[in-house]
Image 1 (tube, rainbow, N blue to C red):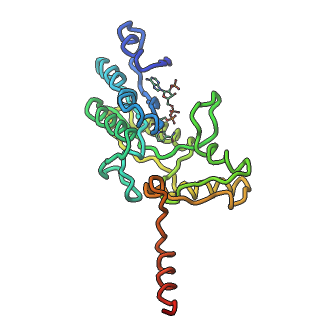
Image 2 (image 1 turned 30 degrees about the vertical axis):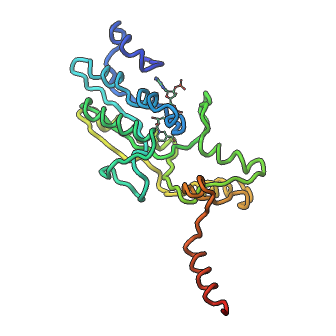
Image 3 (image 1 turned 60 degrees about the vertical axis):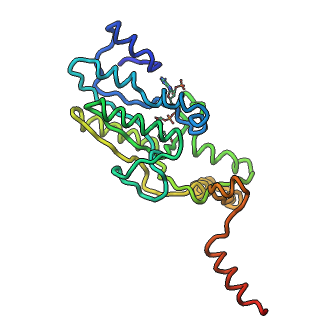
Length: 246
Ligand SMILES: NC(=O)c1ccc[n+]([C@@H]2O[C@H](COP(=O)([O-])OP(=O)(O)OC[C@H]3O[C@@H](n4cnc5c(N)ncnc54)[C@H](OP(=O)(O)O)[C@@H]3O)[C@@H](O)[C@H]2O)c1
């Protein structure tokens, strides 16, 4: 097995004939923080569309390497639930756009690939801790200190446990070794809002549910500070107003 620390080293590696054609490549490299992608779109495109990796794999004579590429559920617009693989991609952020571009590049150039569109991946911290904040650890951080925190009640995802992602990768690499063209949505069995995720963490950890506050992800709330009335509250208000004697 050969470790390559940067995708830029691939050209060097091939030209010095120091690499053998790999059987399977699992590509986890990415600029994966949406906020960072939004700030420097060119960097997001250049890191996330891994043209040097794909070109390097294609450069081997009779290359049959299987490229397993980690993509994201953020390739979808997110206006409905339970997306299928053949649903249209319509990303709403730079991260999602760069991932769609990567998928297109791989689909055009590779003869043997599996694209895994993963939802939020959660699990324990790695042996060598990763710098970015991990989802459950981040959710746990505030109520564990007795502080309240707000979570979106209207953004839904299907978080997947990291071991399940590994199981998917192993299954794909064992089952399809040649002429693979696989596109899979990779999500857990539960469709949960950010609020529900926080409530579950609080429940499992034994924190007071009152520390978890519900807030909308709507731009109305974030840009104008207006929190629209829920339909149920609106119906109640309407009936109360009508019931008042004039
Ligand atoms: N985590 C999730 O919830 C989630 C959900 C859906 C999809 N995904 C996708 O799954 C994959 C793994 O996610 P992750 O959370 O593990 O991401 P991550 O923590 O941000 O790790 C990304 C890795 O890519 C490396 N990298 C960045 N640019 C590189 C380059 N030019 N050459 C070589 N390595 C480079 C980084 O190395 P350095 O640290 O040295 O910079 C880092 O180790 C990504 O493709 C991501 O888009 C993740």
